[in-house]
Length: 173
Image (cartoon, rainbow, N blue to C red; front, side, top):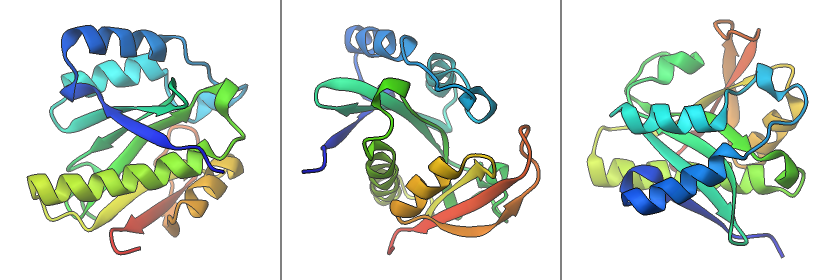
């Protein structure tokens, strides 16, 4: 049976809970070579707390923090999307190294897209889906996103680590 993942929005937590959750994030590990594709998870979460356009989340499974990501409004062009307002940007997506290879990436990416749809319904903004970019040298991540319902929507050459695929999942998908 697949694991259940929970998305914990950091901005909605009180200070005590946030400190505990950020402590879990601070101990997350990148797999060898992943530093080319994603930044430090703790730094990403702090940046998400400081930037109003970013909503940072911790991914939890089986009672443990297993990953992080941020949903960002008005920033979709950072992933090669043609405009900033029609899609949420999924960025900084990471599954903690000891928890990789169990299907949590695909489950969590799909959950992130559902969360973005709920945010659009609650906050407005007119987004019709979620966009992300994935490095061409990261086929495991691309496969996980595809399994989560994201489809290739073009190539993005603006990534700091080389060419990337732009992937999109509409809310009706």
